[in-house]
Image (cartoon, rainbow, N blue to C red; front, side, top):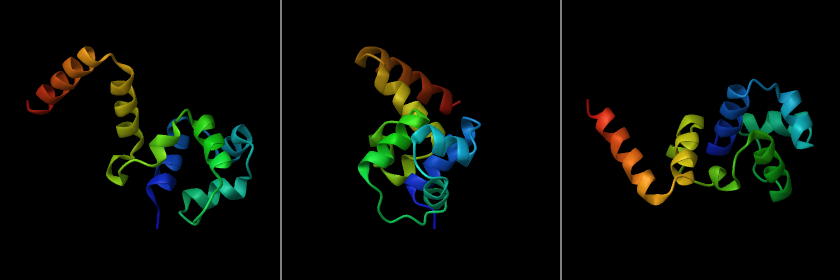
Length: 103
């Protein structure tokens, strides 16, 4: 069964057009580790290796530990974008997005 971490790693890797081999190379970890993570077959991983994978994917460590329902690659990207905005602008953008969704 895929976990939030495995799903996010897989989706983000694919969205970047990376092969498992290329991601493993970028992160400095084994191809086997990336493959097992994506299949949800890893129960424990060192924080150092997880950080290396996050860096290679352009993710934050916190992206791996949020609520599982919010771990989709596009959801994570939207949340990261909103976090990057100053508070007043973030509220304006969030309000606009909500208005669009109600159309």
